[in-house]
Length: 144
Image (cartoon, rainbow, N blue to C red; front, side, top):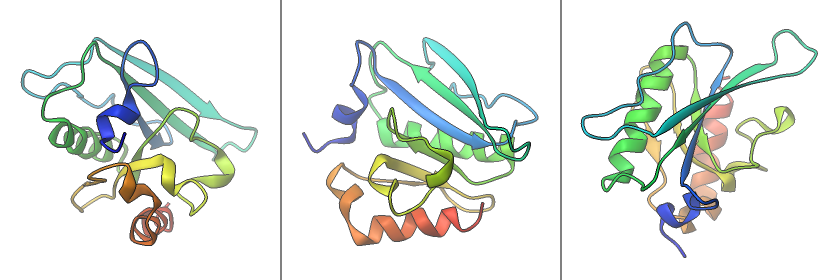
């Protein structure tokens, strides 16, 4: 199990989780051509600090898009534009306010994007454990 798609099939239906700090001015348009999630579930993640807010979008599918990496890059691009901030894709259970885009969570983050930059999506699950990937994730974390 090294392909990214296998990591996204943790439940009965595959889910892509997109994390956007704050509350975006508009909901990103996650549909891309013929790829449309069955459902987009929105979760406000917050703690007592009024500045500690992240919006999670869970994109639910019956089947993952055939051009998965292209679609994931699209999701990062539109979420980054909607939030005008660094955004990321993470596996279920990866979110914690104390570890936003840190080395500790890097193996659970499979895509990142910063405003004005191209999205970066891990090519496979093995990449998530590499020093190079940790550097990519933490560099994006430093922009938060």
